[in-house]
Image 1 (cartoon, rainbow, N blue to C red):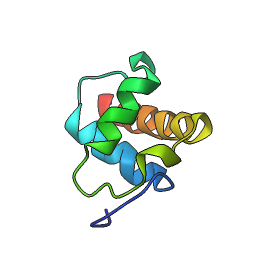
Image 2: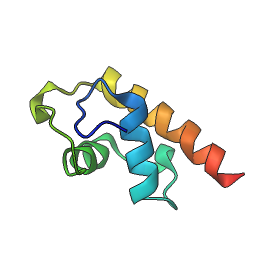
Image 3: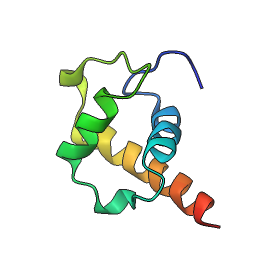
Length: 72
């Protein structure tokens, strides 16, 4: 994972979220909460205002894949 990442690093954000919230089903998370969690991740340097629904959806789907992989 890069030392710093932004909204376009979907996979890196997904892995960081899965590490930080291992028992959370990404599909149960509201975009407003996910946005806050992403901006609070260590190494996140993106502009909080630069996010949009399509980026959050892409992050959520990448996180969901990571979550499913970890569930076995």
